[in-house]
Image 1: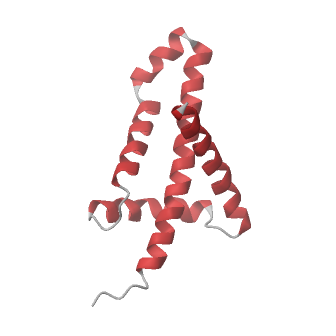
Image 2: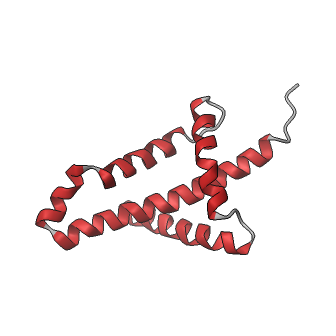
Length: 114
């Protein structure tokens, strides 16, 4: 049940993020350009995206790893379904996290440290 809710949330975030670019939200190119800055800010400890970035890295490694090819060899359709779910979750997470980072970046630029 919890996995279903997480997948539903990921699909919802993906749909919302894709639509946001057409309704005045950050464009896809702006979101993708924010990824290196997000990684640097997280590495410096300025941005709290560490666990989310780790999960995105694990999902990316799962999709591109040769170990993931094993299910495709034996269970063709089911092996592709797990990839589709992982890629969809990853896309939704990247889009929502970059939007969150861009908002964080916008707010922190206006904060004066005294």
